[in-house]
Image (cartoon, rainbow, N blue to C red; front, side, top):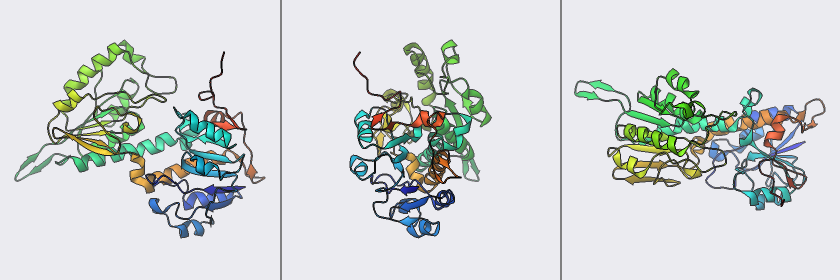
Amino acid sequence: MRIAVAREVDSSEPRVAATPDTVKKFKSFGADVVVEPGAGIKSGILDAEFEAAGATLVAGAAKDADVVLKVRRPTDAELSGYKRGALVLAIMDPYGNDAALAALAKAGVVAFAMELMPRITRAQSMDVLSSQANLAGYRAVIDASAEYGRALPMMMTAAGTVPAAKIFVMGVGVAGLQAIATARRLGGIVTATDVRPAVKEQVQSLGAKFIAVEDDEFKQAETAGGYAKEMSKDYQAKQAALVAEHIKKQDIVITTALIPGRPAPKLVSKEMVASMRPGSVIVDLAVERGGNVEGAKPGEVVEVNGVKIVGHNNMPGRLAASSSALYARNLLTFLETMIDKKEKQLAINWDDDLIKGTALTRDGAVIHPNFKPKTAA
């Protein structure tokens, strides 16, 4: 059983799919671990550290591997070097990328999309969306603080009092909750909104105030999987009016709203941006999916009438060492379910809910029910 840790070819991706600690665990399962030279440099991991953990440095490490660990979906050029039947674990970004999924199938690899991990208790330690969003929420507040020209906590000094910053978090998933917690730790006055009623208590438990139109539709606004539903136009209008009035008074706004498989919902209009005071900051964590904020640009900090709209790409990658450590652990715990430790070989249970939920391709075909090519009636 040969496990390869590939170096990311995308220059904007600093994360790596393994750490010396996870390499040691793979070795204890009887695996031969090969790492591409320089794979961990941007995450602060030297080649020598991988070697000390028992890995071998090999250029083109994935060539003969049974398992390939990556952060991002492999490109066509990378796939050409993988052997047929190899397991490939990565963040595959499958929605709207039919051609890329077809390429994975054509290459004959067994591709697993880590972001499709079922949100069940057994899979919590494998949940990539949660591990990476947690750090993104933290980093959003740090970036907002860096762009904001004032202190966040209230400060009482002999020269006068500095008021606490008012911080509004829109979308209270994992990223939003961490943003709230971080903003509170830094001394901000925090409010938050979400269409899911279940998060109201979570927001309040962190010391923030919950803002929402709490009508009958609001009470039904959550899927069985715990995600936010898309709301009616009527509800969106009522919520937008409430938010518009609230945003006028805020110093920092952080948006985190995403709906799987759809463009990010627009939450902050250009009129709302214009209503904010000069010096205010908006951080759009959904900018790579179309953005929650009108005027946000991927990879840029845009200034509109003195209001900064922060649209950094790959927010978890801005904390590469921490995010790599968590992501590598996600991969380890998932791959461990596919290894027979007694026989020291791969043994995939295709009836396992974790496998069925994440497997995209197998035997030259796209097999995931959400992404199978549509056939003519």
